[in-house]
Amino acid sequence: MTVILQLALDFVDLHRAVNVAQLAVPEGVDWVEAGTPLIKSEGLDAVRELKRLFPGKVIVADMKIMDAGRTEVEVAAKAGAQIVDVLGTATDATIAECIQAGKNYGAKIAVDLIAVADPVARAVQVAALGADYISVHVAIDEQMRGQDPFAVLAAVSQAVQVPVGVAGGVNSETAAAAVAHGASYVIVGGAITKAKDPGIATREIRRALDEGAVIPTTLFKRVGAEEIRGVLELVSSSNLSDALHRSGVLEGIRPLFPGARLLGKALTVRTYPGDWAKPVEAIDLAEPGDVVVIDAGGVGPAIWGELATNSALQRGLNGVVIDGAIRDSGDIAKLGFPAFSRLVMPNAGEPKGFGEIGVPIRVGGVKVESGDWVLGDDDGVVVLAQSLAVEYANRAMDVLEKENRIREEIKEGRTLAQVVDLLRWEKKV
Image (cartoon, rainbow, N blue to C red):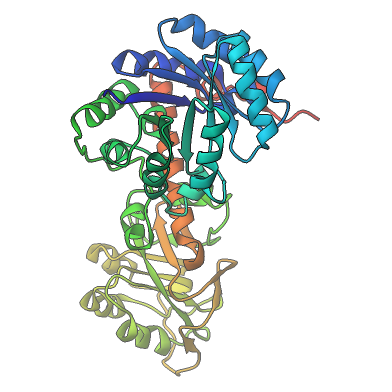
């Protein structure tokens, strides 16, 4: 049996959705979905336009119906949708109304199990109500926390006779696993819609579905705690700050030389101005790959130089961040050691031994604790709290992926303002 590939167009601008769809659909898409953000932004005209452009394809309206099932199915079907989505968390009455309306207006009903507490039990219930399809769906926000849908997919597909689909971060590496876990249709969004070339991305996923192939990809996948470093190695400090809602930036902390790139877990140090004892002692306590982060009060004299740098290199450290002063900048640059500081000056202080290692500190106005992730590049330094690391490393990757797609659209001959429809989305007062 050929597995159906459904393309989820979760844009807010119809012109961008159409652009991607025209590149992707000819390469193996079976069902074209007007995603919920697209319908909320553009209304059912999005469904009408997709129906006009792709008359030979099944058009899905991801309405995520929660109430007024009859009315919402009717208008979606009249706009051209052959499949309409209702939420599994809706009442039985609403789902039954959707199913009856679907029969009246020639549309199939897919029940989306997103956020359902007991998806297997609910799948059995909605199948008994007459649902045509059931979708196992891990929400984007849950994907960012490292969740995937496959265990639930296997359980649901074994419990019902209704065709079961899956959505939730499926890419060319995992598409075959979706089929192996029981998917009759696979819903793919970001792995196509954020790809530099949506056509190539679609062909790879189509091949993965048809051949059971695992096609490696660097992008479009979400990771757990063990793989955070690999994700953060791919993103920039700007990507991470965007993911953190423009926060986490150590204000006033700059790289010592162009091209410096720093990534690692923090070992924190609090020292008194000019006292370089605790910073040097921290080198011996840090693990390979760590970054020493020092609160020196934001003032001089220097508490780090070329000798400390050689010591850090000997220990395999990944860099130093100093809210204070550093010296021997030319030597450190030649060594290529990623060093970021507020100040550079030639005069050093004295080793007096005041301060602490491994305590919470404030650097550049941001609280930093040992174990937090520190990412620095030409733009500066961003700190990612350990407790948020999985989710926001994944969100930073999502930012990178979206920017990759926008960049390609700019290269096609439009400006940034045109691509993102800037004037339309300016806040109205």
